Image 1: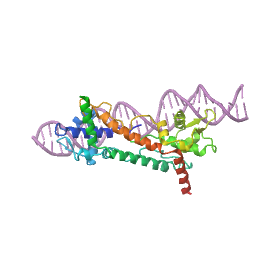
Image 2 (image 1 turned 45 degrees about the vertical axis):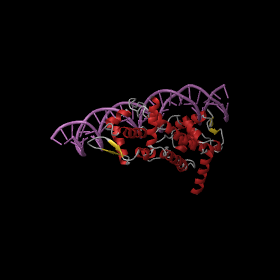
Image 3 (image 1 turned 90 degrees about the vertical axis):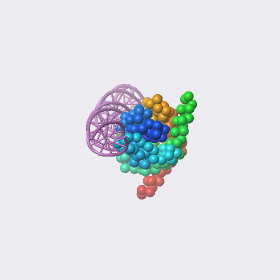
Image 4 (image 1 turned 60 degrees about the vertical axis):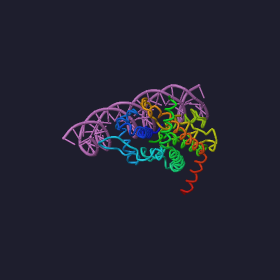
Length: 144
Length: 144
DNA sequence: CCCCATTGTAATAACATAACTTACAATGAG
DNA sequence: CTCATTGTAAGTTATGTTATTACAATGGGG
C-alpha cells in the first residue's frame, strides 16, 4: 500500500519547470515526456499546483512558470496541493459499538496516527525544491 | 489516498485479544464482530501477526493469545507485520532517461522520502499496545 | 476414536481508485 | 483570424482491496 503517483509527479513537473524555464517552452506535452505519463495528468496536476499558488500556467499560449523561488517551495506545499487532506490510515468506519474496543478505536488510534502524520508533514516542510534541484545537478555531475 | 485497513484492523484485533483473553474465547468470528469485518480477513491478519511472532493461534480449538506483553508490542511491529516493505510513495518507474530530471528523480526523491518513512517508523516504535489499551480504558471511563 | 467448532487457504466476485485515452470547447499571442 | 495549447469531461482499462463462498486440516472434548 502506497500513496499514488501524484506527489512525485508534481515534484518532477516543478523540477522540470525550474530547470528548463527559459530554455524550452514547458508545455504539458513537454513535461509529460520527462515523466513519461499522459499530458492530461500533467494538466490536471498543474491545475492543482496553480490553485495552490505554486505555478502560473499560460492558457492558450502554453507553458508554466514557478511563482516562487525553488528554495521557497517545500515538499509539504506540494503534498498538500495534490493530496486530499485526509487521515494517513483508514480506520474501520463501522466498528461494533457494543464492544468497548470497537466503540473507542477510531478516537484512540486516530489521535496517535494524526500525530505521526503531522510529523511527516513537518519533515516535508524541511525539504525544498532547491534541495532536490541541487541533488539532481550533483547526480548529473557524478554521471559524467 | 491512504493506507489500507490492514494496520488499524491488526491493532484492533490485538487490543481485543489483550482485553478479552480469558473472558471470552477470541475466535476469528468473535474478533470479526468487534471490527465488523469478514472473519476471513481476521484469519489472514492473524496469520501475519503469528508469522511476526506477536500472537499464537490455536488451530482446531480456536482462539488467539498474545505472545508478548502489551507494553512490549509496538505499532512499528504491527505495521511491519501486515504491510509490505515498500516505499511510502510510488515514484514513476519509467521516467524519460534522456531528461536530466527524469533520469535522476527516482534516486533523488527516493532518498529524501526514505528518510521520512524511517521517521514514521520511529514514531510507530514509540507507541505500544499498552498505550492504546490504556487510552481505550480511559475513554471507557469518561463515557460513563 | 470420532465429532465438531474452528483455523488455514484458495478461488472468485464485488467494489473502489487511479491512470489512460479520446474528444472538444475555450484561450490568447502572433 | 489562426493555431498550438490549456482546461475539462466522459468513458475505458488496469490495479488493488475487501467480501464471500467453499472446503480440507486441525485437535480438544465427549
